[in-house]
Length: 149
Image 1 (tube, rainbow, N blue to C red):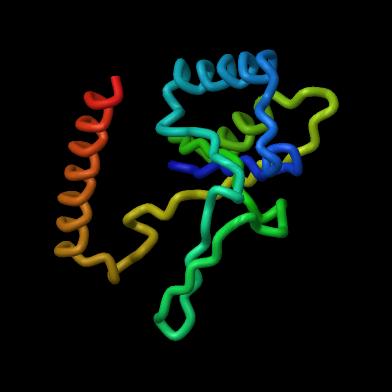
Image 2 (image 1 turned 45 degrees about the vertical axis):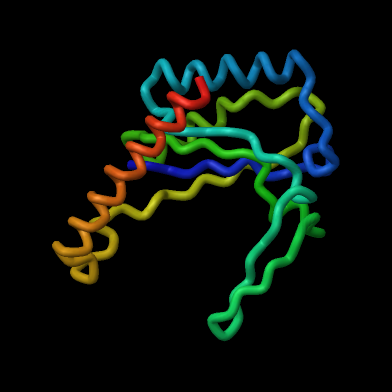
Protein backbone atom coordinates (compact mmCIF):
# COMPACT_ATOMS: atom_id res chain seq x y z
CA UNK A 1 0.00 0.00 0.00
CA UNK A 2 1.30 3.42 -0.93
CA UNK A 3 0.24 6.52 0.98
CA UNK A 4 0.88 10.18 0.37
CA UNK A 5 1.61 12.15 3.52
CA UNK A 6 1.15 15.92 3.36
CA UNK A 7 2.74 18.26 5.89
CA UNK A 8 0.36 21.21 6.03
CA UNK A 9 1.79 24.71 5.97
CA UNK A 10 1.94 26.97 9.00
CA UNK A 11 2.14 30.74 9.21
CA UNK A 12 5.88 30.37 9.72
CA UNK A 13 6.47 28.08 6.75
CA UNK A 14 4.35 30.34 4.53
CA UNK A 15 6.45 33.31 5.68
CA UNK A 16 9.56 31.47 4.49
CA UNK A 17 10.90 30.91 8.01
CA UNK A 18 13.35 28.02 7.78
CA UNK A 19 13.56 25.43 10.55
CA UNK A 20 16.32 25.56 13.14
CA UNK A 21 19.40 23.34 12.93
CA UNK A 22 17.91 21.21 15.71
CA UNK A 23 14.58 20.80 13.88
CA UNK A 24 16.38 19.87 10.65
CA UNK A 25 18.48 17.28 12.51
CA UNK A 26 15.34 15.78 14.11
CA UNK A 27 13.63 15.54 10.72
CA UNK A 28 16.76 13.95 9.19
CA UNK A 29 16.72 11.30 11.95
CA UNK A 30 13.04 10.61 11.26
CA UNK A 31 13.65 10.37 7.50
CA UNK A 32 16.58 8.04 8.17
CA UNK A 33 14.25 5.77 10.18
CA UNK A 34 11.82 5.73 7.25
CA UNK A 35 14.64 4.82 4.86
CA UNK A 36 16.07 2.10 7.13
CA UNK A 37 12.58 0.60 7.51
CA UNK A 38 12.27 0.53 3.71
CA UNK A 39 9.06 2.57 3.62
CA UNK A 40 10.22 5.93 2.21
CA UNK A 41 9.77 6.19 -1.56
CA UNK A 42 10.13 9.97 -1.82
CA UNK A 43 9.79 13.12 0.24
CA UNK A 44 10.72 16.78 0.35
CA UNK A 45 9.86 20.19 1.69
CA UNK A 46 8.24 22.81 -0.51
CA UNK A 47 8.82 26.53 -0.92
CA UNK A 48 6.09 28.88 0.42
CA UNK A 49 3.01 29.42 -1.74
CA UNK A 50 4.28 32.91 -2.61
CA UNK A 51 6.57 31.07 -5.04
CA UNK A 52 3.78 28.85 -6.36
CA UNK A 53 0.72 28.97 -8.55
CA UNK A 54 -2.58 27.16 -8.93
CA UNK A 55 -4.10 26.33 -12.27
CA UNK A 56 -7.89 26.35 -12.13
CA UNK A 57 -10.00 24.82 -14.89
CA UNK A 58 -13.46 26.08 -15.76
CA UNK A 59 -15.27 24.93 -18.88
CA UNK A 60 -12.08 23.11 -19.86
CA UNK A 61 -10.02 26.33 -19.86
CA UNK A 62 -7.07 26.89 -17.53
CA UNK A 63 -6.56 30.04 -15.47
CA UNK A 64 -3.33 30.56 -13.55
CA UNK A 65 -3.53 32.10 -10.07
CA UNK A 66 -0.20 33.06 -8.55
CA UNK A 67 0.45 32.58 -4.84
CA UNK A 68 0.34 33.35 -2.02
CA UNK A 69 -2.81 31.53 -1.05
CA UNK A 70 -4.96 32.88 1.78
CA UNK A 71 -5.88 29.62 3.53
CA UNK A 72 -2.65 28.31 5.06
CA UNK A 73 -4.45 25.14 6.15
CA UNK A 74 -5.00 24.32 2.45
CA UNK A 75 -1.33 24.69 1.53
CA UNK A 76 1.16 21.82 1.55
CA UNK A 77 4.60 22.56 3.00
CA UNK A 78 6.14 19.15 2.40
CA UNK A 79 5.39 15.54 1.62
CA UNK A 80 6.43 11.92 1.97
CA UNK A 81 5.43 9.03 -0.27
CA UNK A 82 5.47 5.85 1.81
CA UNK A 83 5.15 2.16 0.94
CA UNK A 84 3.59 0.45 3.95
CA UNK A 85 1.89 -2.86 4.74
CA UNK A 86 -1.29 -1.30 6.14
CA UNK A 87 -3.17 1.90 6.89
CA UNK A 88 -2.38 1.41 10.58
CA UNK A 89 1.35 1.28 9.82
CA UNK A 90 1.08 4.55 7.87
CA UNK A 91 -0.67 6.25 10.79
CA UNK A 92 1.93 4.94 13.25
CA UNK A 93 4.79 6.31 11.12
CA UNK A 94 3.15 9.73 10.87
CA UNK A 95 2.53 9.84 14.62
CA UNK A 96 6.31 9.49 15.06
CA UNK A 97 7.04 12.65 13.04
CA UNK A 98 9.11 15.02 15.16
CA UNK A 99 7.18 17.92 16.61
CA UNK A 100 8.81 20.36 18.96
CA UNK A 101 6.86 21.17 22.13
CA UNK A 102 5.88 24.60 20.79
CA UNK A 103 4.98 23.46 17.27
CA UNK A 104 1.42 23.28 16.01
CA UNK A 105 0.86 21.72 12.61
CA UNK A 106 -1.22 19.14 10.82
CA UNK A 107 -0.32 16.16 8.65
CA UNK A 108 -2.75 14.57 6.21
CA UNK A 109 -2.44 10.95 5.04
CA UNK A 110 -4.17 9.63 1.92
CA UNK A 111 -3.95 6.30 0.12
CA UNK A 112 -2.59 6.39 -3.42
CA UNK A 113 -4.98 5.00 -6.03
CA UNK A 114 -3.67 1.66 -7.26
CA UNK A 115 -4.42 0.01 -10.61
CA UNK A 116 -6.98 -2.39 -9.12
CA UNK A 117 -8.98 0.54 -7.71
CA UNK A 118 -10.04 1.48 -11.27
CA UNK A 119 -11.70 -1.88 -11.92
CA UNK A 120 -12.63 -2.76 -15.51
CA UNK A 121 -12.14 0.83 -16.72
CA UNK A 122 -8.37 0.25 -16.49
CA UNK A 123 -8.12 -1.99 -19.53
CA UNK A 124 -5.11 -4.19 -20.37
CA UNK A 125 -4.11 -1.63 -23.02
CA UNK A 126 -4.19 1.20 -20.51
CA UNK A 127 -2.23 -0.89 -17.98
CA UNK A 128 0.44 -1.57 -20.62
CA UNK A 129 0.67 2.15 -21.44
CA UNK A 130 1.01 2.99 -17.73
CA UNK A 131 3.84 0.49 -17.30
CA UNK A 132 5.60 2.03 -20.30
CA UNK A 133 5.23 5.52 -18.82
CA UNK A 134 6.52 4.37 -15.41
CA UNK A 135 9.59 2.93 -17.14
CA UNK A 136 10.21 6.29 -18.81
CA UNK A 137 9.76 8.07 -15.46
CA UNK A 138 12.40 5.81 -13.90
CA UNK A 139 14.83 6.58 -16.73
CA UNK A 140 14.29 10.31 -16.21
CA UNK A 141 14.89 9.99 -12.45
CA UNK A 142 18.13 8.11 -13.12
CA UNK A 143 19.27 10.78 -15.59
CA UNK A 144 18.42 13.56 -13.13
CA UNK A 145 20.30 11.78 -10.36
CA UNK A 146 23.42 11.53 -12.55
CA UNK A 147 23.18 15.24 -13.46
CA UNK A 148 22.72 16.41 -9.85
CA UNK A 149 25.27 14.38 -8.17
